[in-house]
Length: 158
Image (spheres, rainbow, N blue to C red):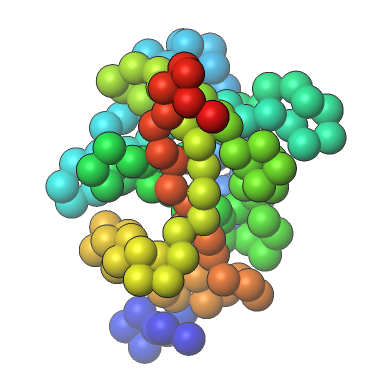
């Protein structure tokens, strides 16, 4: 396990992480995205509002996730506050990869896919530049954390 200053990277208690993300999502929803979303900077990630289709209900499901840009693509991590379980939004995207994202720049349709091989390594390294504790946090999970690429698609594309 990667350590930070000789110990595990600190995370707030699970209840706090969940409460924070619920409050953040409520802020974005209540302000229709005017607050709570931000663009990534060279030394930091941004926040986007992701709308997936529920794999069981077929209903829209919304969540706020961190991301960075890789050319025209948006890249996020399939983590659940670094908890063991896969996030529901990622399970939804595996069932139906078409989704919608809202960033501070506007809304776009995307198709999600898991980064593999050299691409995953490159994108993971970029995340590690943005979050020095990435490897230590990921080591807390029992399975590999998926790096998710959100490719912009046009209205007439698959």
